[in-house]
Image (tube, rainbow, N blue to C red; front, side, top):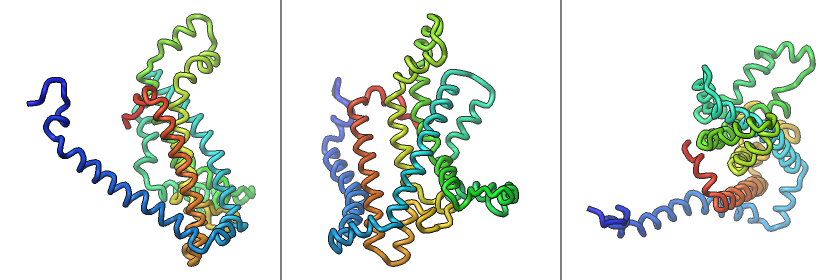
Length: 284
């Protein structure tokens, strides 16, 4: 039996709590902090001069610019899609709703390599539309367009899956009231819907952006690994590592890690300041 008003864990397992905390901290240190330390340690192993030279050489700069460009295109498009899909699913009942939800979740269960291969089968030289694209001098595979498409496919569930449970939990009473009072559709969305979902939307965008910048498998298939043209930062790390340029590889990896840490700080701050509003969409 448990004491009245006291949680079970506090009355029956008080001695296990410190052990669980220590075990969790140990696992996180080994799996997260230690690899990060190794990345930055090896990046600066030959001094700050070599590090700066590695991250400012033309291929590295090109990879960074391409990574940011792909994310800058893919993330806003996925944000628009996520809002539209969440609004449609949360506000209406229609045939095929379950199918739409399944399609939204599909990239979570599909290998990123397969996600890239899909575009090769469609737009590659031997793909369904390959002949037409060649005849019209349109390049998708081994070009920035292919990288964007591959990134969109693997990242589009993040925003939608953050918004759907929140919008379902909030209901549509406020929107219905605004429409009854004469507000138009755009006004209702801008003044009612968007403010209600803004923090969950920002949270989803942060997750989507982190995945977009760090995506490797899908973009590797469609990129062709053309240095200075189609190598994003993750691909640039692989190329340098395979060339035994370990300092350059870890320097580039440290840039990726830094981008991830910035995203983590923003995400943690968002959760801390708006935990109540974000708690509704932790069901997936």
